[in-house]
Length: 186
Image (cartoon, rainbow, N blue to C red; front, side, top):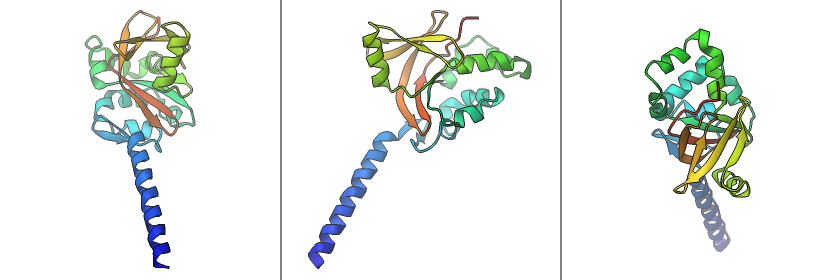
């Protein structure tokens, strides 16, 4: 009887340890905060110190409810530093209520319907002979290519943005952190 209890305990601890390892592999740190795969895009993004500008923009654009929805979504999430690369005054201009349509257009240009992991994007790049094309929620196209083993976005204006953290899984999709804001053709 003791042997059976011991075996049961060892099995339970082994399963617990394996689950903890799997959880740790799926949870990534972004902006000093853990991004839990059981939380949605907004629930995780609000905790990232690197995405305070993005969160403020999403709130100002009225897109919180959308990004908390079922999805799935692939979000190319610009950091605060990415927004800081824009010309002086651009973020303040976009956050004004009268510019909500422009802000919504830029933010939804960073979102693709469906959940695309980095591996899936790379497979699409290979299949499409070097450049994968995605239709964004905004309605425009976003191209993705590889450069020095990194995914690089190319917007409709020819500007680029590099994925710095990939495969941040969410309950309603995936986030890939990017180092520049991409914009649709105006």
